[in-house]
Amino acid sequence: MKQKTGHGNFLTHTGKNIARFFIYFIPGLFAVSCIFPVIWLAYTSFKSKTEYTVDILGLPSRFYLDNWKYVFQNLNLGHYLFNTGRITVLVILLTLIASFINGYFISRYEFKFRKFIFGAYMSNLFVPVHAVMVPTYILFVKLGFNNHWWSTILPVVCMELTTSTFLVNGYVSTVPVELEEAAAIDGSSFTRTLFTIMLPIIRPILTTVGIITFFHSWNEYAYSLIMFKNEKYYTISLALQRFQGEYFTDYPRMMTTIFACIFPALLLYSLFSKYIMKGMVAGAVKG
Amino acid sequence: MKSRLKPPKKVMVTYLLPILLVYFFIFIVPIIMAIYFSFFDFKNINVKTFIGLRNFKRLITDANVIISLKNNLYLVVVNLIGQIGIAFILANLLHSRLINRRIAELYRTVIYFPVTLSAVIIGCVWLLVYDYDYGLLNWFLRVIGREDIVTPWLGTLSTVMPCVSIPMIWQYIGFHLIIILSSMSSIDPGIYEMAEIDGAGGFRKAVSITFPLIKSTLGVCVTLCISANLKAFDHIVTMTNGGPGYGSTVLALYAYKVSFTQIDLGYGNTVSVSIMVVMLFILGVVNLIPKWINRKRGEI
Image 1: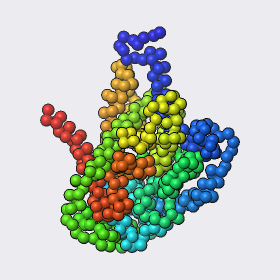
Image 2 (image 1 turned 180 degrees about the horizontal axis):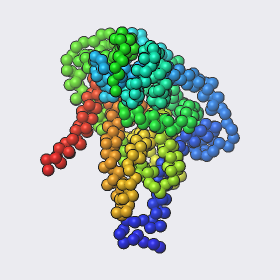
Image 3 (image 1 turned 45 degrees about the vertical axis):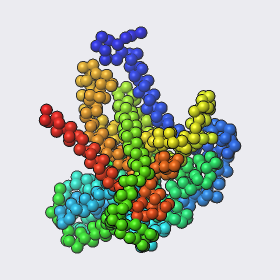
Image 4 (image 1 turned 60 degrees about the vertical axis):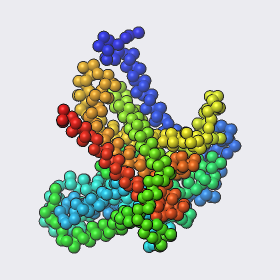
């Protein structure tokens, strides 16, 4: 067997193979731990309770659909998915419009209170939602804004404005001003330039904003917890928690519910993983 | 670049003001209210009485606050080491020239996936691991014949905090991994080649080249990790709801419980405000450390 050379650090052939083994094996093992739970949930959703208790890891012996029927018919999971989806779509829309306008004006023009306004949007970073739970709750109850299907939309939009305003602001500053000046000379009105010229140009950053917002809104929990008292407005996070308390002894049913909640995110992720990773990290680092 | 074509004031106000008003109303006003309310005792939402600093006195003598704060700090330390440490090691392995680019990419994509899931889902999945009767962990222990260490993992005071932190570490390794990898990809490969010619091995390269060159990125990771764990809430509510007893309660959860389960809005709000104070204090200190070290170096 070859030994390491006298200088000690040059890897020989064998050494390189050992190194290669670890380089593939360690991250590989961790990657398996990340994807295995999803696969486990997926096939267990076709197992009956007795089958599960006999062998918790075994594959289903036949195509058992009762769990799925139960989850969508008795638990009415579709309704909670719809609630979450409805909120998410509106949150994304409002966040895109608001951050586009905020980012554009703050980046492009010098005006009174510009720094102050930008600072106000950024202050969100140091104030977690949990620090303002009580006053938000009181404010919403007094105005009668709590416990409607739309109750969490504006709070979540505001939560998202910090990162998204920051991202749009940064992106707009890289677009040359001459574009709008040329448009103005050609007689385009301000609003028209804003929406027909600027908007298409900054589409890449808005895609990023949309992705970040989707996941934050889809996974939102704290505001929903204090806003929704009525079960019919529950989002999937709240519904999952309630089911978990009530049906916890029926594992395959629980796992079917979890898998159904993961599925939309899984689908999106498998289609757009590159954008999603890039977008979410950009939001976190810069925000 | 600032534009010379400033639109009329009226146009600017029409665009900016509505959003700003909503934002102030939903986010800035509650911050001010939170500070103001911490001097009050609430009978209900509408009736409150001024009690001066009594909420704060109660806060610093409340044993549960101390436990919660300790648990928060435990999470911060364990997650800093676990998330960023493991992510740094994995990043170095995946950045190696010995690994096939495609496979490295696949690993990265798969490892990032848990980050996109909600904490409630992650909590539910891990409940299936820790469950006493049919959990994966106890099943595995029984299979390998270690029946003796089978316990209700989340129901035992000595194991609950480590067991709660493992899912949190596991979920967010991918997040820090991507940040670190993207920062590593901007390092000139020539530096590594030169180091290799000089005889540097993988470990040497990671410690002496990669680490100092991505220090500022690691700083961002540290800040994000600290603030995420000081506001830890969702995972813990799902997995243990703070139990057994107050064994795994964190500040945000305690504030929630006092406010909305015990319906003591005044004191609960004060506990909430303390999260903000602790966060600003710790982030301030952490950001001062590098400056302090640099100054010390400068003196020498």
